[in-house]
Length: 190
Length: 167
Image 1 (spheres, rainbow over the protein chains, first blue to last red):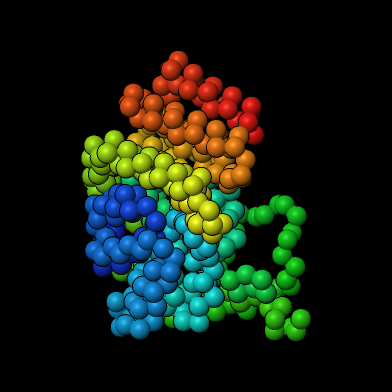
Image 2 (cartoon, each protein chain N blue to C red):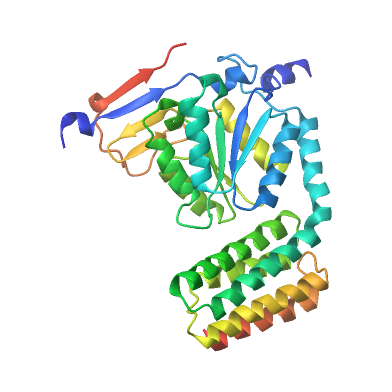
């Protein structure tokens, strides 16, 4: 039993986390917020539109003390008006400040999971969360972002988390046209 | 494209979230205490008590959006009302799927999909939207959960026939 505990790693505490939920439907935002509070997340903010989310990210992640920065965004895909969750992610990834552009984002939608995963991956989301959201599915995606962050790629037509999640050998047609000497690796240090 | 533009940069960032969650960088993946996940699922169950009131509110909003769309005279206002209808239908789908009201979910999704192609000048499209709204109210008043049995099949047929006949 003790061995199993060690293999699973520590029980994480999310008290210090600040999460932003971007969802136009307040009922679903409240439901997700309540679940996150049960997980122990200390600060949960809600935005009902992409415009409001951008304002909050500018305020918390560029203008205030870095310790006040939002740590993660969970955004719905479909929202009224001209901006969707994918537009928000594109804005995040194109931001000039690292405190915004490297922000982990989970894209959430009721669309079929294969469609959602493809859209999420290509727009620079870290994870995709399929509705209906259960406590288990939310915890799983949240833990994946915390435990298994992927490196970020800056390619000519893409910036975001590496779209190849698995580390095993890829046996499909090679889509990357980059030679090894054209890849530069940057390791951040504490 | 210059060589530097062709370059791919790979950024290996420090996992600050892991540190913030109380783990060390080289720790094996952490977990959430199962009791908090159970409590969070309890939140979903408690919210189910609000389902009937909430879905009624969204259905009223949806009907109001549709009413505004068919009575609207300015293109922009009609477009806005149809956008409202689309998102209200999506909300019905979201809330119904969350609490296992599969028939309501089915009609919410069907209306959301149809809302993407509504031609407001086409009277047949009015009939299809109205058929959706009517059956959603029946599902609401009858409190049909899950698939809903023979009644559900009848309601689905009404909508399918309306779509086949008028679209």
